[in-house]
Image (cartoon, rainbow, N blue to C red; front, side, top):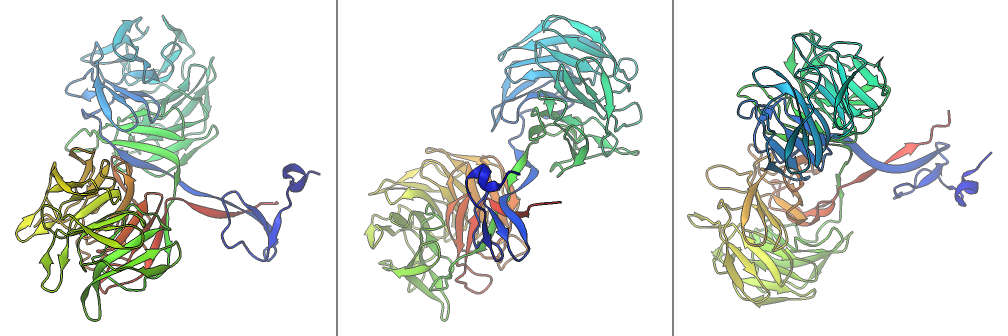
Length: 612
């Protein structure tokens, strides 16, 4: 019999229970439980919002992957449109339209080489068009004009099945790159059917006979075979689209049940059975879909109920890491409204200034974190609170805020070299409650903030010796958070009286662009991130939580998604790190605190080896 040592050349180490900090992939023997155990990543399968298509519609067809897709046709867009849009993994771009605008088209192919067959304008169509990456060209028609057809395959080897002629159809046609040929029918007639796979290995699922059906069939290149049904009857579903095989597919959205209602339900096909998964964020029917497998997919458009069609896009990832907060070292001085080296890491950062308690005092105290504990280092030259911060534990910058003894607004700036602070040139505009971004004490950004009667949109850029006014935020506000560098930054949340804001703006080095809002609008929040494509926002004051929230959100360059909460709420906290590894420290809730929490964008699970 083979042994682990014989295969790997290593013995399995034993422990009384489990190792203190096991590594991903590590294998050991637990003597107490008398079993082998191992460590694996903790993941989930879920949808995440992405940038919307440019033109809302439903019964859109799609093909390609989750990072390179094509969406075409649909209704109304505005009326049985020929609209075509290309997805590059982050945004949609309008490209050349179909020659014949229509909806309910059978898709095939990828984003640069696609096929659109059949559909409906004012009548059912047999029209087929081929996409070469830049334009559509009419090619040979289907043998049977129909709409709401399932599709699979490539633009030179495709399959079109089911749909509606004068009644639901079971017809299947095969494309060889130049002509369509009728082949063996589906076992079950149906329209508004979902489809996935290739010409020789496809799957058809759901649809309307009528009524709605859960029937699924797989195609082996010659004939259809009935397989395990969907868990619920449904039609007008979104499929993971043409490509892959008949052993891996995703079915999402549609209308579901004996009394049909719009659904967000998602099911995954593994080649044997369907399993329910995490739902779409927005229920809809007739969405476009792409992805080529059950691992990654894209859902776009659809009808979400009154007032009508949607442009929303969501991305499916079957292996999404699950992040979590854990306890870190406690600071020496509890404080709130502090500044920090926002571009530091979870093992090297500094906490600067702020407001202490017993009694309330503005401080200039600076502490350095080494990954486990805080150490007092040299103070600021001028104590302050509610300023902005940037840089790292060896090259930091703090600016603006208010100073004692009379809570005076300041534009003073101090530079940190790893051991001491030096006063440098002031901001052009004195203000408090501003945000900062930047990777060092020679390249930083200051934006937003407040002075009496004014919520600032001002942005200033620091070059190591002076501040220069650059393009303003689109929305002036205070008590916002910042992340990133002086050429790639984010500003999010804040207060723009009277409303609390969830607005997020992205800085590209010259100007701000509005992007997806936080899910929970709030002020006095904190955040960290390496650039404008990946950040974490946490804490703050969302109504009605005046004493500090535990809500954490993750930004992917387009949208925010709620992730694991802090163990305790806090506002006006310090922050440092990246979207995969960061720190939250100090703040108040409602009393001033000194605790630290460490963020990990991925966590592990301990599993037991089954010896049965």
